[in-house]
Length: 194
Picture 1 (cartoon, rainbow, N blue to C red):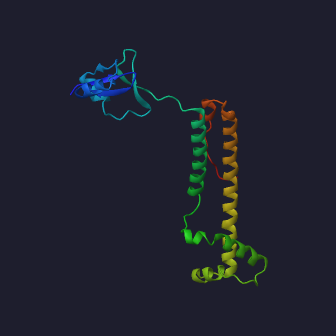
Picture 2 (cartoon, rainbow, N blue to C red):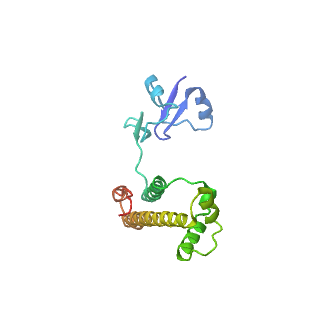
Picture 3 (cartoon, helix red, strand yellow):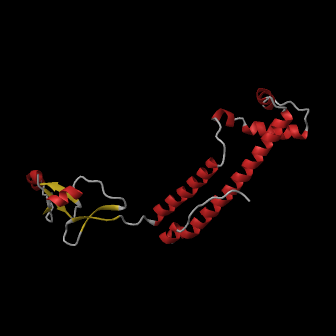
């Protein structure tokens, strides 16, 4: 099998199909026969990380650097990174709970705060949880409020940090007139609240 490469098409062409290409005037005029080494390196091969197929000054196939992303693409990717890193940080610093239990958190917190303010109120969510755990409702209410306050502090801190990175990104993007270097310099690293 003889393979040709066209720099203008940046594609490979099998010599066995040349007559078909010529019949439709689609055989590239700059098609050059590839060496065995070129065929084994480039034809049907996955490009290395950060590279793509291109041509050298003589029209021979080579791996060339990928072009830098557009400013818009870099902005979108950095925004996604900022958001993803924030969520990963929250996930890494919060215990895991089943989704059905998480659906009760707002109700647990509301009941706990109300119970701490007035321990005579009915607590239809906290009471069965406390009973199953062998706790007093007052003790459970204190734990629920402490966890809710800790989560609020963590999420508010991370939200503020995330928004700060987004503000930096807005400045770096500058309505499409910014720079890739400024966007790439933003490194979202989240920290626990002080």
